[in-house]
Length: 356
Image 1 (cartoon, one colour):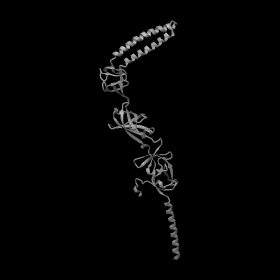
Image 2 (cartoon, helix red, strand yellow):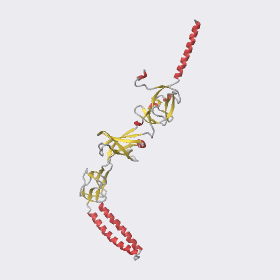
Image 3 (tube, one colour):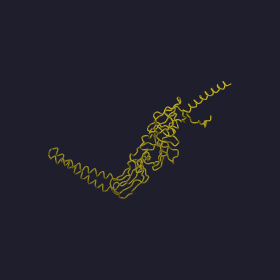
Image 4 (tube, one colour):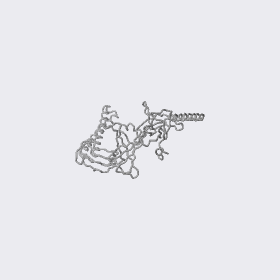
């Protein structure tokens, strides 16, 4: 009996030592929560309020002063390129042209006789030079008088609409004073203001579109025209976009408000989404730990964190990490590169709480 008790005690001691060793080995391996690296390219979009503008919105003026003889258009009139919009009383300019033409004809005749005599060696080179330069001078004066008369007529520079007529017939005005404001009939533009933080990343913008509250369900494509290189008083940079419409889409009018959406990529690299707790910030470096299921080990990879998302995740970029990889989602300050771990995978939607 005593021998049996000794044998039983020895077996229990061996079993106890074995179990203790197995428990200690498991406890040496930390348990970490594992999540999946997701592609996040579709999440980078920006929205800005904008306003529709005519492709061309200009004020037209006479290049000479005078009294308006006749206005040929009214507010809202549609006009074609080259159509007469208004004209000044040409009487004074016609008189100037007649006087310049008479002097031109006289000097031209005299210069012709002198140059003919010079060819026959009858007159001096000095007389010939005076005739040549005198003819050039009077020709310039004559052409200027013709231009002045032509400037008493104001023509439409493009097809479009008269936005406002600023003067009426018989009113006197100075050269350069706006007489008619016009907008073009071409494709309208959309103008938005970019903050400096987005202006410096404009090379990452890939596509643009806009929507209008009054045109429910309609989305208009936009093409970039330009971005001003200088900020305004509010430290905003103006971006101009040309509006494109397809099919039977209604045409927005200048002055309408719109919402512009800009799609972009981050530095031309693939955007990845990981839990915020997966990112380790240490000594100025940013990194994550990826889990290798075949070896049950984790390895550290350097990443660049671009911004936080509203769902508890953040965007990172990396040349080495691909979507679908397994990443340590929390406790990254307590693990080491190359360490073996026990993974705690996310609960399945059909096994809430991990009870099955």
